[in-house]
Length: 131
Image 1 (tube, one colour):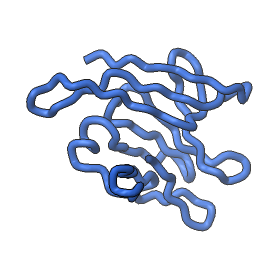
Image 2 (image 1 turned 135 degrees about the horizontal axis):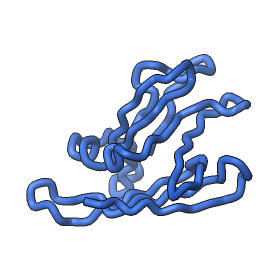
Image 3 (image 1 turned 60 degrees about the vertical axis):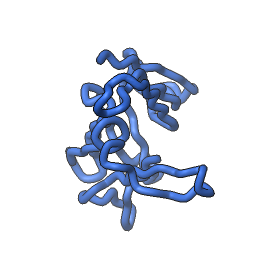
């Protein structure tokens, strides 16, 4: 799970995105990501471009930038371009596979679900990860 961190209608410049996991086997409690989850798949790095505009880098796919912005109503949104389609992301699923004996897994693909940036139509795109 990812949440934009905001105060008084502004994205906080220090750690603008909170990444965490929901552990359903423990009653759906919220827990921080483990260090290996941060480094290899779900962690987020950010660069502030301007106020309320950040470039995000997902650990699972550093070559595909994500952009955190506020829409006209002040709601945080993330957009990216996948397979030449610019889209706002509503959901993202990272498929892992067991391969690396030391780390235990690699990322196979990322499935993005959201809305087309230009038309607002519902869209889904899959980004295959070359390892």
